[in-house]
Image 1: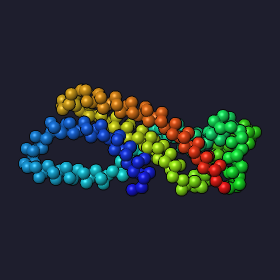
Image 2: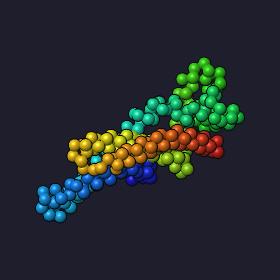
Image 3: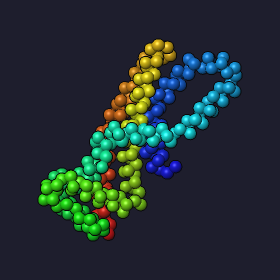
Image 4: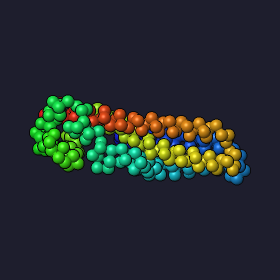
Amino acid sequence: MDKYNRIARLYPAILGMLPICILLAMCIEVWFPQYLTMMGNVKGILCLIGGTATVSMAVGYLVSEIFRETSKLLFQYPLFKKDETEMPTTKMLLWQNDAISPLYHKEIAAKAKKIFGIKLPTREEELANPEEAKRTIVDVVHQIRQHSRGDMILRQYNIEFGFCRNYLGASIWSILLVLGLSIVNIFYGWLSWWPLALALILQVLLMIGCYKLLDIRGWAYANYLYATLTGKE
């Protein structure tokens, strides 16, 4: 497993499911004597745990994919659009946006024209057809990404963005599972209310914080992406 898949996909899945795993572990303290009676010996319990671990590893990749797609559907696409026309990498190169100076904008446009043969829209062309201007910028961004694929610092920015995005999907599922466990707990009384409430509050706060970071890391990625272009021939 490479660094991106490990940090940006696996770690968010683990962290997102950590609260529910802790709560389930607390429930096992209540369930464990029943398992001992049912299985008859410790060997049976170890087989049960081993089987669960094997299943967990088998479905681990699938779970991370579910979290990733949930993040895209609920957060990335509404915030940045599926065609990436609202991504920071796109908005940074719009003339209507003052995130960079006109001089730097012209330098990026000159580099894009020289290296990729793609002409970025002028201010007048953007005003006349802003959606077409965005699509042209998206095409340039894809070319710059390919051009800068070996840059390790840019990859780190990409990992940070991916981690924030994927953690949002994991946190949604974690919150749903905590709520489900809380409802079941009303009838069975396995846990007191405070660990459930604490897990839910912490997860919501972390999700809000990660949502804020998503946009911040997106702009940081865009800044460095264009720096790699203007610093290369």
